[in-house]
Length: 157
Image 1: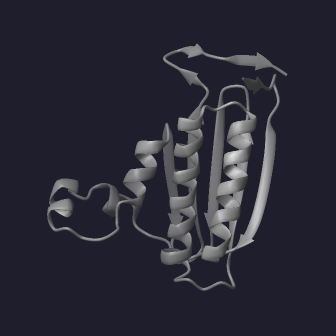
Image 2: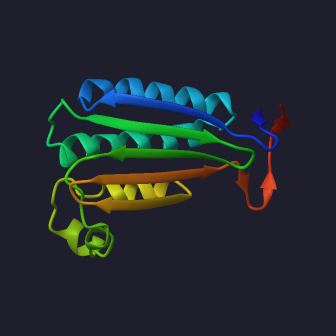
């Protein structure tokens, strides 16, 4: 059962070194929060995988595996959604270039990787990217409690 928050938000923050060893900690935290607020196992897995992919992208692409930099995570929960915001100060990227990629052609070339953003968009209800190369990149992902206009299996806190 989901604990709906009336007219307030719960907010969790984590600033963690950009090391692949820390991905397990991030996944554990995200899964625990998602379970605690009542997402079913399928949605918990989707949220966990999307966040893991975003953080792995930061480590690999934004920081080129340089562990002196950090990943900033914010998780906000309100009465209708769980929002995860992942921020880095890495090199940035051209979001439109990646989103406009012809997926069928890309897959036909049998390239390894490069589908993380598409995966995140498939797993979450909303995904938004803001990138200012060399300054800051932010990935905001949302998963709603409400499905097809109905709040299911929810109790008020």
